[in-house]
Image (cartoon, rainbow, N blue to C red; front, side, top):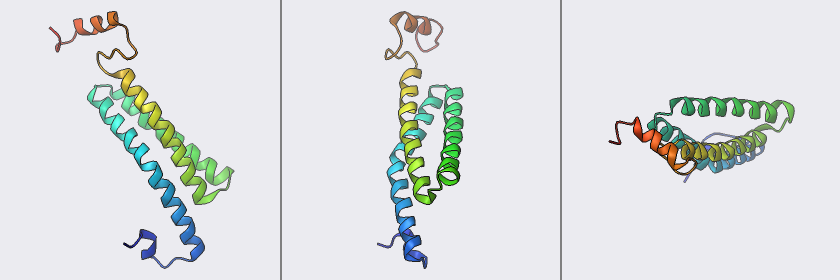
Length: 126
């Protein structure tokens, strides 16, 4: 098994930074997948404005966290990876909450009377 960074002739200090970056990015991957899956579910619920808004806000927050990590805190690759992990953890929580809140005819956050109102105009419930 050859890691990606082993394919390049890197100095040990650069390789250590690359290992740290990749480690944090791998830790962020499950959360990133949750966010992407939630976006797909929202699209399936025909809540396209929420899916688009989620992706737009996520992109803006990622850019802001990258600027904070690189420019203001001067933390390099390590700070970039940590900030990305933090953003995706928070985004996963928000996206899952949006899915439950936006589910059609969901009783999680809605009353029974609002479900009846939704069913009255829906072609799926007759």
